[in-house]
Image (cartoon, rainbow over all chains, first blue to last red; front, side, top):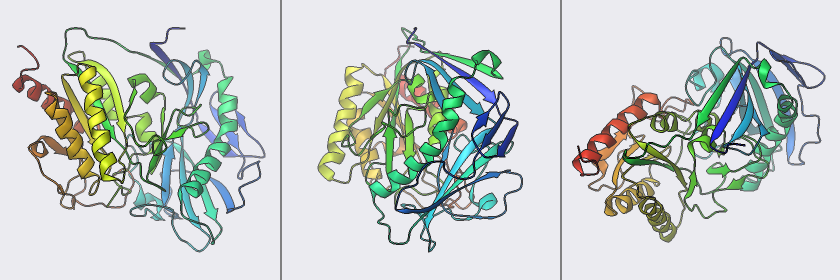
Length: 246
Length: 159
């Protein structure tokens, strides 16, 4: 396998619906409205809704993250092949049962259409369907890194069965396919990017090198690396080497 | 101060990162990669991670770098310190971060004038709207343009 090349097959979801189990075709997906695993003792509930960005004037808890759905088919993050879903993205929101919001600095709870700017690099497209995962903690929770990681991890666990089905889908049936090569330009000035990211505590953290693109499982917190600089290739970056925990 | 809803980079933002997209695909530069560095609480560590970043770039024989951050306030110390460490190695450095009317630098240096403001809101504030003040492709092009000029001025490129 050429470790300089990353192929991303994009499957465009036209229909996203709630059903009894996970089922994905080349253009549609069905997901349950609750996790099919036992949720953590610190949680009261995890509720799933399908939302249309064009019709979303309703109240939500603070937006903890916006997450793409992608999975490794061949190779590791940064090379080989990934299957990715377009037309659908995930918003994770969270609070405790009394309404205490899960955030570090400033909350985005309120009406969804007023609290997010769609069509940016970090937010869903207004043509997407949104899978809204709303996590409610029991009121006696401790606001710390462990609790927040558990919330992110629960969302990740909910998404994993989608990735498992996506993994075995044939790239030839993808709506689009992109090939990214690490191209050198000898003789040109050498340029690097330095990204300074959060690394101090609960909801102020980032995770790298998870098994799945934009995933949590096996990820390493930048705090646990004492915030030391690490080098990522452009392809690792665009293959989801980082999961934000801000 | 920290990272608010309007400047925070979501997992989706990293996945579609406009800065990586723009710089990595420019045929006029030899793109080396992204150094990801955290923002520790402890002052000793703040200085250390900045220094380590500069050592990496020096060993990579980097001519120029763009530093970006999605937080402001306390993390400005890390931001300016890292810029200074990189600049001291003779590497051209420009920055991108949220400033607006709310987040002027808590520390100043010779490098602050090479930091571009990514604010998008009319009010120039943390609007608590997710995605509102994020770095976008236009910011990335501006920073890369500024870096090219700075590299020329600093004698990193011959013509």
